[in-house]
Image (cartoon, rainbow, N blue to C red):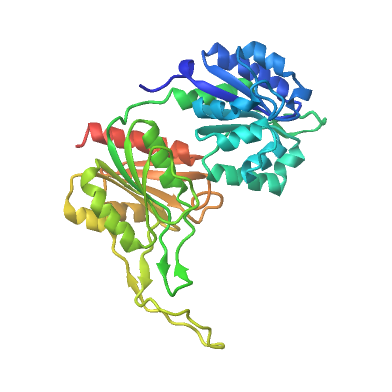
Length: 404
């Protein structure tokens, strides 16, 4: 049975900043929702609000020191980490983001984070200059790549007296985000998904390969959201740095032909195939056994051959599965997607403009067009890929219920 927030075990991580006073309100709201909340504080957070305040409101002991708390010998941070459904870090300072991104564990909160295996939600709060600093941006990118979710800070008056981005999101906004983790639909229960994600690598020689900039984020988001909604998910992934979503059966590969073999092998055991991988269209005709040497100013001519078209291979089998394709295009987006939809006998196709700045490859957001078999065109504005994944799953569910 899916948990609700009323029954949830939540860890509220509090790091040291003036916004700590809002953490008290966040705790109050979570307790009011019926959650069982344990508070964990960083080394300096208690200089702003005492542990006793959080203990009184939560009704639970507060873990705030690695060595001086009453239950240190019982490894209380490990017990808390093992039993919780969600870790919410609010506020998360620039220092705490750095510790989390780089695996440092020198206080109670950063120590617990390393021991925690569940979902993590972070609400940053800091000076506007710190929020815009490249090091902070990089740390956030690292955490996002590991599946950490964020409630971005608001624009407003900051403690330093300036107005800008960096103000902790309102407690009600953070509560809404927490609710979304537990009040999810279970409408895909038992439906079997086969999803491909990421790029493929086509080797030229022992040290070089042809590929593309796909990060795999879209396919991983579809896999994560399908699993969260009750589906059984097999994810076939090309080379990425992404962490496999919890509960998803992941199969890894490198080359297009390896991905094709895995798709054909698992196709009979799925109800829905979502081909979001950016599969290479061509591979070198010959794989050189030794590294190709540079010969002065002479150019290099490669003989390329087409790779197996996985979706065409699926279409030939006439498997009866619901099949979703993706089209990454740089021009004539809709026309190219419609052509692919018909040629490969797809039920749905998701097209996006890879030439548009700030979306698509490597980005956490995208702007797409979804076209169905009846050629109905739906333009989806810029949204996080996780939200686009849910919208796509909604469209898939409608077609499963009404296959004609």
